[in-house]
Image (cartoon, rainbow, N blue to C red; front, top):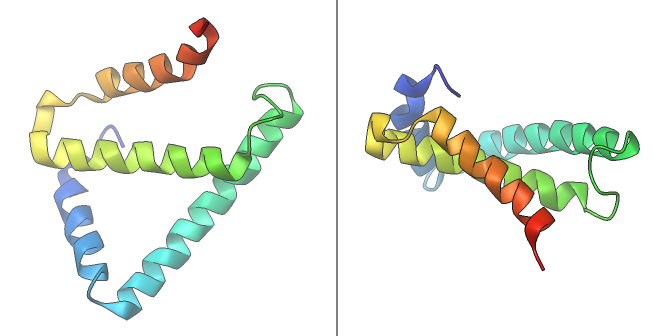
Amino acid sequence: LRNDTHIFPLIIQVWAEALRNPPLLAQLTALFGEVKGRLIQMLASSQASGGIDPEVDPQSLAMALIGLGQGYIVQRALLGEAVSFERYRAGVHALMRSDEHAT
């Protein structure tokens, strides 16, 4: 995601086109399903090795992580270099750590 920002506007156009083009929507749905499936496997593996709380639902976490990636794509496409990968990543890390400091 860091180096391919020039294609982000095109990605958004493809997502928009999929909303009115059922065959394209089916292709994107399948692609997102594959990505989510791989991510769920990685998260479950991380749970098994103690890296992620075993109480967390891997499917819910995968959906949230995909949404964070999509959010970065949208923000970067709209706002350009005002949204840096490093700052976005730092924000995500802060969110992930925020539960550690909750009272």
